[in-house]
Every structure is written in structure tokens, then in C-alpha cells.
Amino acid sequence: MNAERDAGPDDIAALKEALAAERARGLEIAAELAVARAKASEDSALIAQQKLQIAKLRHQIYGQQSERSSRLIEQLALTFEELEVDATEDELSAEQAAARTTTVRVFTRKRAERQTFPEHLPRERVVIDPPPACECCGGHRLRKIGEDVTRTLEAVPRQWKVVETVREKFSCRDCEKISQAPAPFYAVARGWAGLSFVGHDHVREVRPASAIEPPGRALRLGRRADRAVDHGGCRWIGLCVAGTSATPSRIPRSGGRAPSC
Image (cartoon, rainbow, N blue to C red; front, side, top):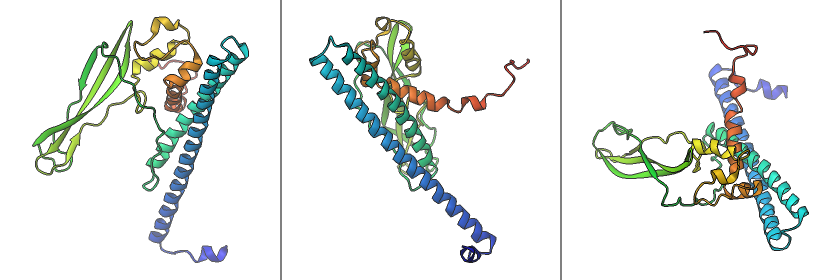
């Protein structure tokens, strides 16, 4: 052990290079472990979801009047929600760990295909200002070649609407580089729920489901088991938990007193 230590480089530059390589390797190992943990969590959540769906089908076919079957479904729904929240947190941790490296691929969970919104819902088109110049060469001769449209369901008191956020694509006539405005902040990454809808969604725990039923989405808000399988509300909880986990540490300790003006 001492011989290996003595055989190391003596100059400072070589030592710094070796230290940087070891740190990079450590980040890669941590990212690989985070990705593996996220994949395992996804598998556990998927298995729990399949068990819940099977139990619901059996209850629907054989035992709609069975109290034991109803309790089993509620228990499986709670288990699935907990595993879904854990899987979401592990996915975000894996994304953050992979972003610190250049060799580990970012892990993204498989999402169900999005449903289309009813045509009768009002649309609000929000167009993000395009970049003023080409991000590659700085040229101003841009032509529109397309656009990306992201639809989110927003909640207005006693009213629902779909917000279409448009990011137009432009190509530079000088260097043919494609430019596009960055995506705005979304409450749920790669999700269709807007900020107001996420906040509105959790109010349903203490209010009648019929008063706040979104139109045409078939979310079936009345039961926890239905919510867990149908629209991934527990995934939103996981995102909220992961996003606010660092909040308490950033709040200054003022002994419970408000700062003086």
C-alpha cells in the first residue's frame, strides 16, 4: 500500500489531473447507482400498478359487494401511491446525477400516451418570443420552419381551459442553424397539468368530487384507487416533494419571529 502511494506522481499538475479524474469517476459511479435505483423504483411502481388494476378488475367482475375486496383495493392503491412517489423522486435524483457527468445517459421513465382534450374547452394560445438572432452565428436572417406546442390543463374557478404554449422554430439563412426559445417552467415535467390545476387537484381530498370534476378527461376523482391509476396524481405529489425538499434549509432561522421592517 505504501509502495503504491509512493509511486504516484510528484508534480502538482499531475496530482490535480489525477484528482479530477477520480472525482469524475466518482460522479459517474454515483450517477450509475442513481439510474439503477430509479429503474428499480419504476419496476416496483409498475408491478404495484398492475396488481391494483388486477384487483379492481376482479372486484368489478366477481365481488362488487365484498368489503374485503374493497379494503384490498384501497391498500393496494396506497402502496402504489407510495411507490410512485418514490419512483418520481428517484427519477429526479438520477437526472440530477447524470447531468453532472458526460458519460451516463439521463434516465426517463416511460409515460403513457397523452389523451386529447375535449374540443369544447376554450383555448388560450401563448406564443413565446423567438430568439432575436441565431444562437450559432448571431445572424438576424431567420425564417420560421415550425413550432412545438405544449398543452396544459389549467383550472379557473368554475371554469377550465387549455393553454397552448407555442415555441416557434426558426432557421438561420446564413448558417442553417435552428433556433428556438427555451421552454418555460412547468409544474410537472413532461406533464399536461398546469400550476393551477396541480394546486386544484389536491383540494379534491376535502371537497366533493362532483364540484370540481374536469370535463372530458375521465379522471374519476371519487376514489383514491381510481386517481392513482388514471392520471398519476401521486406522481405530482412526488414532484412536489422533490421540489420542496430543500425549502426548509433555505428558510432563515429567526426564532419564529417575522423580520422587522
